[in-house]
Image (cartoon, rainbow over all chains, first blue to last red; front, side, top):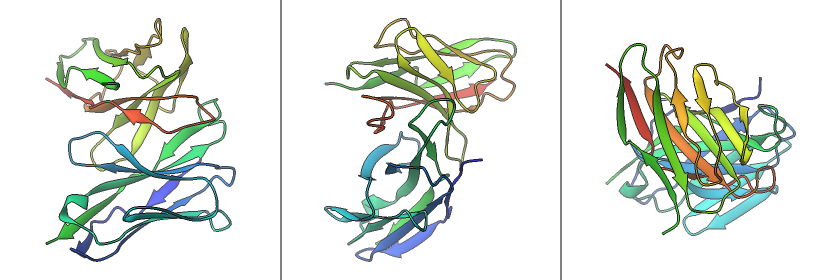
Amino acid sequence: QKEVEQNSGPLSVPEGAIASLNCTYSDRGSQSFFWYRQYSGKSPELIMFIYSNGDKEDGRFTAQLNKASQYVSLLIRDSQPSDSATYLCAVTALYYGGSQGNLIFGKGTKLSVKP
Amino acid sequence: DGGITQSPKYLFRKEGQNVTLSCEQNLNHDAMYWYRQDPGQGLRLIYYSQIVNDFQKGDIAEGYSVSREKKESFPLTVTSAQKNPTAFYLCASSTRPAVDEKLFFGSGTQLSVL
């Protein structure tokens, strides 16, 4: 059973701090890794994707990938109350559902940024 | 504006009734997907389609059916065989599955049982 694991939280950080969100995955063949942000009652929106080991930065967001440890993380610098949402980790799974390239989602980590 | 349109936003189903959720996209994407989300849970794949007139079952297809007669449209029918249909349903699309899996989501349909 291919799995993506996330700490459900809630993760509470003060405004201006760094929020660190973690995700582990079981399929060693996974090639692509995504972070989606989902506000309550809304649909997910893609905020970061990473394909290679190392760090990828985009504004206040940094995605980190370590394929050897099967671990991907999202750092949010200078956290703002507007960052309060559930963050979903998604990983490609080869041959999931009979087709290459479909995504498996974790259950999400709820982040709360306190003013 | 390009995007994915889901309708209705809220839907109520009576016992034994089939209901259909609409999903339309004007992004010219080849692949379309239906996900189900239960409270506090991740997204689970119901059905997906990589090309017109072709679709595949996902992890939880039982009690659901789909069609893909046009590239732009991928409706989902929740049949009476689905005994626990209350959930948030999300339609998504992507350009080329297995090459670029970045998903774009519609705004979702909340289905409840009367």
